[in-house]
Amino acid sequence: MIRAAKGGLFGWVLDGYVGWKFKSAFRGLWVRGELPGGAGARLVYANHSNWWDGFVLHQLGKAARWDTYCVMEEHNLERYRFLARLGAFSIRRGEGSSSLETLRYASGLLRQPRATVCIFPEGELRPFGVLPLKLERGVELLGRVGKVEECVPLALRYAFFEHERPDVLVEVGTPHVAGPLSRFQAELEAAVRRLAAATSLEGFKRVVSGASGVAERWDAVRGRAPSA
Image (cartoon, rainbow, N blue to C red):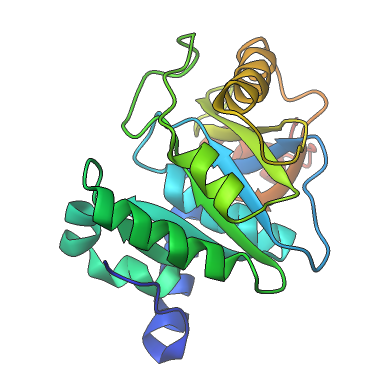
């Protein structure tokens, strides 16, 4: 497997570049609910509907002060090996020995303070809001093997709300201890339903500011405060 290799000069430069790319592509990263913090380790699991999802979790982790890692399909990480510098590590789906090695590695990470291991249990890109979700058992096994006491479901959505640039919306679900796959599915589906029903940014807090659009810049010139 390919292990995470965070840090170093290249990692620092890459972290800055990814942040710049994210902020130039979106108006902002918005969160509804309380992001868990503190020194404890946690398992974060999310729906997977967009190429940007891993970078969203990276930005979210920085905002929440997590030590973030993310499980990634090995053939993709092999192509973009530099992502290991941001905390990505690999798994070969469908191969028992690879899955076991990844589980052991992730369990070791979860024994470190502030470590946050992120996983997309759908295993592939799927349209946002289509239910029921089809989760693979890796998230359940990781939770059990790692004896995780804080599993955090996150729903991710990309939306336009009367602005030139899209916003990234995150719904924080109810944290829970590791349990059966049905628990993970129920909690993530509940978060997805709530997020799918959102028609504005009311109730969300912006944790990362992105680029403004033409309308917002024009309002600034006219001396008007931009709308949320």
